[in-house]
Length: 233
Image 1 (cartoon, rainbow, N blue to C red):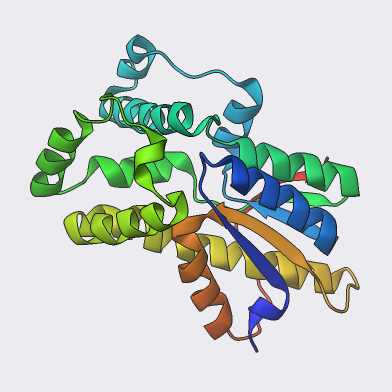
Image 2: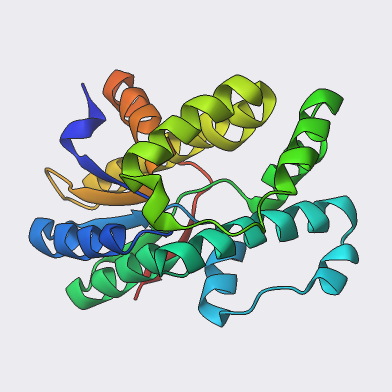
């Protein structure tokens, strides 16, 4: 049995205004029993506080804090160029779930686990990443990129080739966590008496195909996963 019969995934670019509009339109049209988003508890709370650590504050957390700061700056830079702050599509999903009165689930891997894995990156990838990060703060015009979605797909292909370890940690392993959590949400809805659950999940474009593949191949099961839920909002 394919769990895709119960789960509709929206693949978004975290810095694309079109993604935000698609999220709102899809959730309101589908009217699901639950909404799931690619966040964990810490990032969900940070998003709601709308506060980011300074470089000085990040350095207090050592190497992990510095990595988190650099990744945040990358998203901020892209957000400036595309006219949208990172996370707006996730906020849109939260608001849509609230408007429908359905539960919201956070399905991504714990950020501390992710950062621990990133800190163990092999030397070759670490050096290459350091060199490429230097270009993050150079001026880039979104108008020169053509179709943003297509550029994003190409970027993922290149990222997998250049950073196999990081790709496994940031994409493949998180795909497995999110797919398992989505299956648990479906099964919990069934236990609550929903005969044909409908779940809309909002994830990054780079995760969509991988999660769909896992959901399509999964066998029906009855188990609970350690996802954290924000409850009905």
